[in-house]
Image (cartoon, rainbow, N blue to C red; front, side):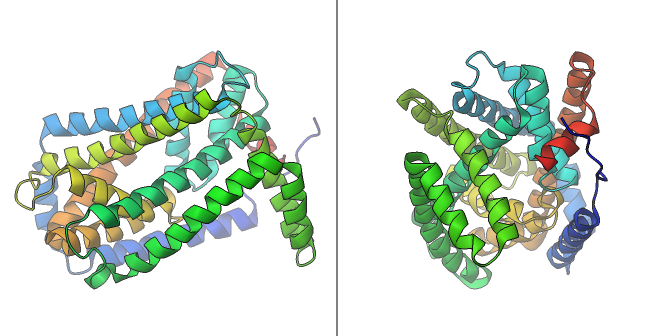
Length: 351
């Protein structure tokens, strides 16, 4: 392996991170503008300890199912991969993403590659596949929310959601077609796509080709009908775990009965707020708060202070949970695998 003479953070990385922080600050300003922060804190500090624990359990169950789904995707690569290592890597990934967007995916690949003695680049291919599956599942969840909401989900401040769902539906179908073509034709499809892009930007084409190879390597691990079925089933359980987390959050703050926030509301708020998490701010800071507050106000007439209290509370608990869990598993992997260093992350970024 050639030595890598690259700074851990390039000027471009620093610029993107500063831009991400600036975006988070703008969203936070918009979310908290005109909100009584003292009243907001009063709602949060009186949260039920029982429901906080319940919330954490649901969140960790969702991550455990994510680890099981990842195991199903990787089965042909290594059937006996340990679920606990995948679970730890998932949490490390969330912890890193809370600080630096996208770095978590690399950290996941490094942790599993080292712990299971597998190629980190191949593991990264399965992570890319997971992200594609997440996009499909979250797109479907948002579309489903538009169907199950009892009323006009596109009114007021959420008028942008109609266009988002329409575009999401198109993207959902396009992504499915893309995945099917990529699985069925693999090299032919990637070569055709990159050759077309090369005419406009050779540099972009090269990056696209690298991404295709990672996706092909990732999808190549899904070889049996059983793996596909397990991937779908675990994806459903992951989403149910996230929805249950929101449901527990309603109960923790005692706003479930007052504003009729039941199971369907938990699914809808979880689905819409996931759009905020996908916006490239560190850990969804600001974007999650803004979208969640608006959704709860417009769809369930939940006052801004309550909606923002819920968003701040749920995001805060899961954010700290991910950081703590990531730290625990970093120590676990460090004790188990003393050879893991930051150079491993740099190296996988170079490949």
